[in-house]
Image (tube, rainbow, N blue to C red; front, top):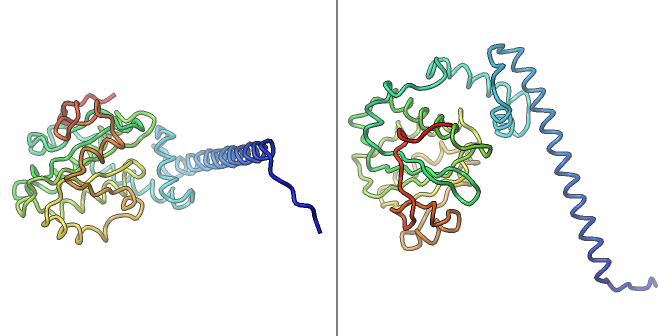
Length: 264
């Protein structure tokens, strides 16, 4: 009968170090594999769309990850995005003169960063009225916001969204507009959303939620947090330092309208 061995501190330390080394090795291998696929994606994209030479590595990586590192699918995804951009922002960006009606409502703010360094965005949904919005202008406004966030989010390429539903009523219900924004985020800004906090959700919100839910990508569903009103500050402080949390939610940061945020 084999003799039993008693684990020692030395054996446990050696096993732990071996496990850590294996994890580091696998991580390095995964990163190298991703880098190779990003390089291949760049080559194939330049062949299919020569004017894409200026696309940065971060964009290629995000589109690749959004398609589970399948180069063929990522290439198709990127080509669709680039052709879409020719229609919605031919000069490469949305001009503020195109979205003046949306900007003046001051419903989107961006300031501070969470504990992971992701820019914090606040949307006051009750300031959105479908009765006086033009759908095409609203789409361009969404693009303007996402592009500006991308320009200030640094190396992380992500943002944290606080969607405040306080005061939300039937006058703010815009299924067509909200679905359009959701499609823009999912189809053209993949891997940008870090987390979505839904605040002050009234009973009416759940009607909207049931309509929107089938259109939400599973990857985004996993990032949604429904915040209890009574635990709002406590919940947000788990991810956001009090110095970075907007004053409206118990923090010290002043909210800045998106039009006043300086792009880097």
